[in-house]
Amino acid sequence: MNADIILHNGRITTLDPRHPEAKNLAIKDGRIVGVDDAESYERGPETKVIDLRGRRVIPGLNDSHLHVIRAGLYYNLELRWDGVPSLADALRMLKEQSDRTPPPHWVRVVGGWNEWQFAELRMPTLDELNKAAPDTPVMVLHLYDSAMLNRAAIRALGMDAATPNPPGGLIARDAGGQPTGLLIAEPNAFILYSTLARAPKLSFDDQLNSSRHFMRELNRFGVTSVSDAGGGWQ
Image (cartoon, rainbow, N blue to C red; front, top):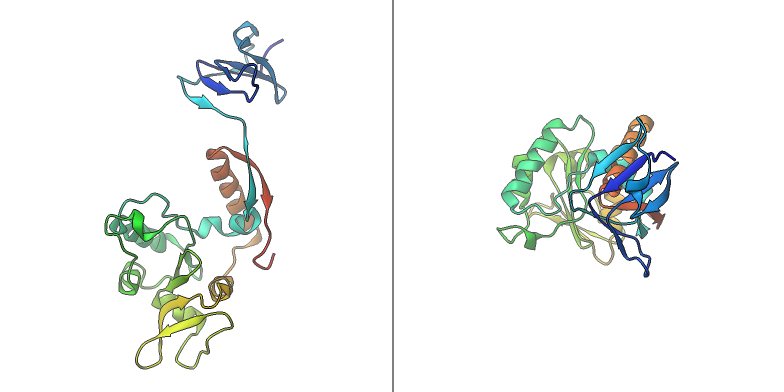
């Protein structure tokens, strides 16, 4: 029997306590048909042979609490600061993302970072956000406690001195009563998600494209199935 795919020269986690690690495996019609005997399978003209070069292969992971639908709908609009080593790099990325984001869409930094990962050991200032993205609306979410809006986002939302605090949150204001761009989740995070929900949505086709990109990113980390936790007006 010809195998469709042969993985060899690797470290393959099997989760079989009797045979916990293998060096090769063979796949036929989407099923594993050989473990540590893949070299005995015939290789037809369509067989794909992958040399793992000692890399680890694991079974697909399941994430039991993920907002995969909601995240997928907006993934193409997100800027990820995961693992970015400095605030200077993060602000440079923000400028690049804002320059390529078409109006009226926003740039969203919604998680996966904190100020302690940056060499500067601090959050960006509102002035820095405004300098990096003077014309494109930006919302930077800090955990579940606060968020920052640049001036373009404040304008897009129509926020001014007469805008009341929404239920479940505070709008920070300057001495003249004008919103500074800082949103404070007090007593809860409703202000953060309700504000983000007011940003423009992608078209249906772009939502599909965005969802596919997000799922491909999950696959890159080994996640192949999820349980969606709902929420967020889904």
